[in-house]
Every structure is written in structure tokens, then in C-alpha cells.
Amino acid sequence: MRVAVVAGPDPGHAFPAIAMCLRLQAAGDDAVLFTSPRWFDAARKAGIGVRRLKGLAPRAEDDDMDAGARIHQRAAHISTEILPELSAMLPDMVVSDVLTAGGGMAAERLGLPWVELSPHPLYLPSKALPPIGSGLAPGEGVRGRVRDSVLRTMTARDIRRGGVQREQARASIGLPAEDPGPAARLIATLPALEVPRPDWPEDAHLVGPLLWEPTDKILDLPPGDEPLVMVAPSTAHTGIADMVATVLAGLEGAGVRVAVSTLDTPPVGLPPWATAGLGRQDELLRHASVVIGGGGHGLLAKSLLAGVPIVTIPGGGDQWELANRAVRQGSSILVRPLTPEAVRDAIKQILDDPAYTTAAKSAAAGAAVVSDPVQICHDIAEAAR
Image 1 (cartoon, rainbow, N blue to C red):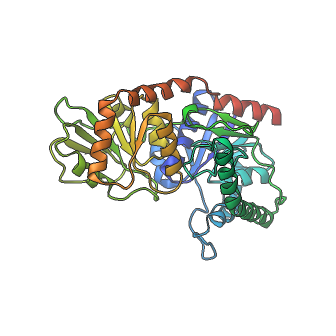
Image 2: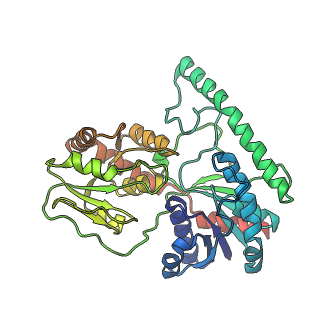
Image 3: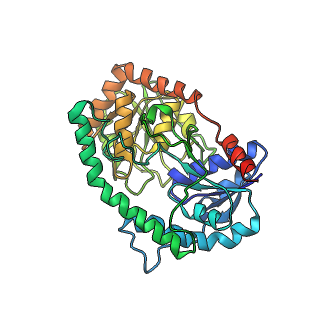
């Protein structure tokens, strides 16, 4: 089976797409990745065919301050830009990242089956949950249910507006205004980070995190035998700035070592008990006692799969939602506002209380009960023939 996998350049979305390509290829399928040239070399090194995802650049008429317009209008444009290459490669199906909806639109225009890849929990609204992004647990009792109902009412207008924008974007490229949606939704998260809901969609499948390491390098650890704290600043543009400097200030004299894992230029002038650079995070996690990160799904899932608790310092986007879910699961402490004292206290609390590590290991164990995303793709492609 030949599969086109479409994802934008953000590491939180490109990396799971690459991991999906590798899973498909391990099953004997031919996967071709449409993404930013930023990841071409690494993907080719992994044996994945690549194509440039055209249409990513903002246009003069785009309103990037409007999230709905950014997603839906850009998606329609992307679908037009990639249509010739997608048609030429004759795929059997398309896997399209949840934020790169143009892949799904292009598949629909070609009459191809497609599935949506969500590299995080299911973020569709639910009749029984507070709005996604609030970070709130489902309300309990009459007051809790009323609270959630009021909050859902407050966000319903924006959701309806997004639906209208989607319809307009579809109509602009000749698709029916009503969106039939994907044949399946691959929810690439840990069950421990999901929230039970009575209206879970039948087409949504928990498939576990799709993780990929962008390097083979191993980061040298600081000398000593003190507990290792792995720090991974957010790769999202909504992440907290200057996290590393504040964390290092807070951990000075705390009796720990620090390894800063970064995709970008590492900080300089580090103390002797710290190191920084690009290195395999799965290898760092083998030695880490605690992780500090922004609460992005990739790092959070990777840490929990390794059974390592995490201090989350959430920025914008979905980081607040995910950080609060991890706190409720018991494997994390949320720090906001970010201060050296708060970081130091959180690290001490996790190192002193084994319950956080126990909860992280429990989350890892839950990953055994997920569906196979490749088998789901095979089933859908077979049904479409």
C-alpha cells in the first residue's frame, strides 16, 4: 500500500508524522512524507521519501490572527498546491495531521480515503466535558455540570464560526460545504492523558504516542551521581521563553545534575553540573529522575512512557490542558508563574515523594492497551477498494 502522510513543520506534528511513516514502512508499506524542507535530511536518512508541503507560507490575504481562518483557508490553499504531486504519486490513502487539514481536503478532491492523525488527546468538544484548553477536570455534582454547561455555551459561538469558515474554505475549492470528515481519527496519546467521555466518536482510535528521535547523537551527561534532571524547552512558538536560565538559577546548589535537551543552539556559560545540546531524549530519559518541560504532548508522552515524572511549565496552546491532565494523573507538578524558587520546590517534592514516579510508571503501563494505527489504515484502504 502506498500512503501519503501530510504534516506541517512544527516538531510536535512533524515528528509523529515521521514516526507514522516508519510504522507503515515496517509493515511493508510505501510511505511518502509531505512536510517542510526543514526535516527532509532527517527523514531521508530514516529511509522515508519526502515531498515539499507547498502552500505553508502566509499570503497577503491571510489573517493569521484568526485561528479558524489560518487553519481552514490555509488548508484549502495547501490542498490545491499539493494536488498535482499527490495525484501523480497515486497513493492508496492519505494520513493528514489534524492541523494540516489540506492533506485531507486534497485526498477528498481525488476521491481517496484519508485518516486524521492527532498527535495529542482528542480535542473535539464533548457534551460532558468543560471546553478543551480550560485545563479543568469534568465538573462533579449539579454545580460542576452547570459550570461546564455555561463554559461550553461561551465557546460554542467560536466553534460555530470555525464550522462556517471550514464550509467556506471547502466551497472555495469545489468541495461540498458539509464536511464528511476522515474515515478514522488516530489519537496518538497515552490512555492516561485521555478523559473519558460518553460521546467518544466511533471513528476515533487510541493508538498510543508516535515518537521519533531527530538525531542519533548521545548527549554527554554532567559528571557525578546526583539525580539527573532533564530540561527540554518547548519547541512550540507558544512556549515559555527563557525557561532554561530560570531553571538553572533555581537548581543552583539543589544537589542535582541538569541535561538540557534542545533542537536549537544550546545555551552557553553553563555551570559544571549542567550540559546542553542536541541528543536522543530516549537515552537521556534512561538516566533522568525528573523532566522539566513546557507540557507539550511529545515530551510529556515520552517522559511518561519512560516512567519519569515531569515538572510542567506550560505556555499557550494546548500546554495548559495537557499540564493539568498530567497533574490530575499524579505524575506531574505544574509551575506557574515560573520562578527559580517554584522550580526548586517542585523538583525537591518529586524527588522526595516516590508517588510521582509510581504514577508515571502506571501511565506507561496503560500504553499496552492501544490500537495499531497501521492496521486501521489497512482496514480503511481495503474497505475503499
